[in-house]
Length: 182
Image (cartoon, rainbow, N blue to C red):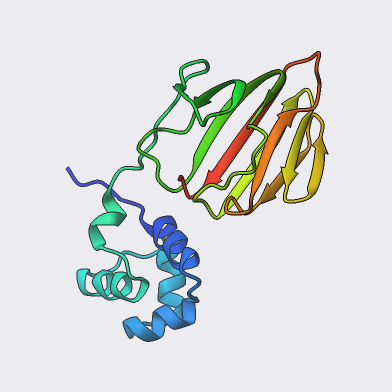
């Protein structure tokens, strides 16, 4: 029993992720731009030779088009407890442990809790903080940024920084996203 496998969206996503145009792929694969466009919309079935040529032009293994999507679920309250060295903070890794491109941390910061008095750095390109509830102060160099619920901030993790719960009475709940995972 044969099954119609739709690969167009994967080809398109791979092409766009690499910043390539339809025209450049068509030229490299020695095919028409119209054919590549139709293939990305699953309107045509390529020959094996055409598919190999397009995958080569995109820089993709043919087998990647047929691999099932990888999804990992971390259920509420089931994140792996971690400790980045903060005081008065309960942190859980809520991105799957096999993820190396991004790390997402759910933090509950007690009143007065902090990342410590000393500024520190992380081996990541981007650090992103989102305040769910409470107030969070982020110290970045000589500047202090006060964040409230719904506020978000991003900066280079390699910049010296620290943070603290800006309230001495209420907990702060925040999400931290680190890219790539340190």
